Amino acid sequence: MKRRSFLSIGAATGATLWLPRSFGAQAMAAGMSQSRGYDNLLILIELKGGNDGLNTVIPFADPTYYALRRNVGIKREQAIQLDDHTALHPSLRPLLALWRSRQLAIVQGVGYAQPNVSHFRSTEIWDTASRSDQYLREGWLTRAFAQTPVPAGFAADGVVIGSAEMGPLAHGARALSVANPAQFVDVTWPTTPVSPPTRLHNNVANSIPKAAYRARLAQGHAQLKTVFPDGAFGSSIRAAMQMLATRDAPNAPSFASTARGLTKSSRGVAVICLTLSGFDTHQNQPAQQTALLRQLGEGVSAMKSALVELGRWDSTLVMTYAEFGRRPRENESRGTEHGTVAPHFVMGGRVRGGLYGMPPTLARLDGNGNLPLGVDFRRLYATVLGPWWGLDASAILQQRFEPLPLLND
Image 1 (cartoon, one colour):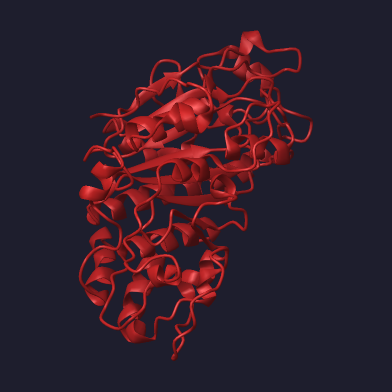
Image 2: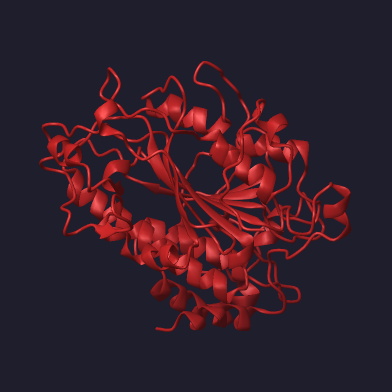
């Protein structure tokens, strides 16, 4: 099926794209340039559980890799070679087109000083952008939107899809939650309107009145289900792309109207957070990670195609993150234990592709058998806050972090 058929959703449902293309006076009043600001969408993909970075971005030329991973290591002939030293997991082949077009940046060695290997605490550190010995309440995006509010015409600051946790949008952001994306994309639309929610943190699938479009959307939803991968992550991406393509029809409430209590005119969101769960691979890692990375690769590839057709790829930044990586040495259960640093992907039409950060130095493991820190994760956040959105990253992150040179002007 051609990706272009995705646009039939728009043809079925009305006039103009739901997400904004520019701020005009509001953006300039907030001190943002036309090329920066919340018209630039951020899509965060959480690899929940702690993805094994060494089997994702593989140092295949280092014999120590295979000495440490006799059972779970990716065979050299199966890996997708990027240069003389580095390769991708074979399940990430869908990302190869992005790599070749220089729209995929891989930042290696991402983590933080004095790492914590507790899922709960390390997730909290990444969500709040705190030091390992510091406890902050608000998510880093919540602080960003408090400093420079998203324009009043937006439906919300952001939306979380596929998780009950608000993560970087916690404690103060005007955020919507789609806890069950399968319900959202597969819901049978009610025949009578549903009252808007009194709280924004909710499963919006239960509060979206779609009666006015019911028949016209049926074909579009069927096509969405065939374009994007099966499974929970595929449902999350379908939900996100549905939100981008939804258009208001006269007298027909849309997803954006669930924020009616906040705004009179809904124009979009600044961030979409997606979750891909299952990366806590203590045992039988090869099969489990292969399936997860296939979902990631196919999902991002399909998302990119849809964003291109929607005219949004050049104004979208896609970034992965996780609470930590895994230890270099495999365990006795064909798995890996909680580790520290890991590589992360940054993708988009304005991304300056290539390898960044510090490649894994397997000969220099610390006393716990973990890799040394290469890039503080807050440098990724500083790149989003500064070059992408035009905000004061130092004030939001409470310390100066140099942005990474990941973006083209």
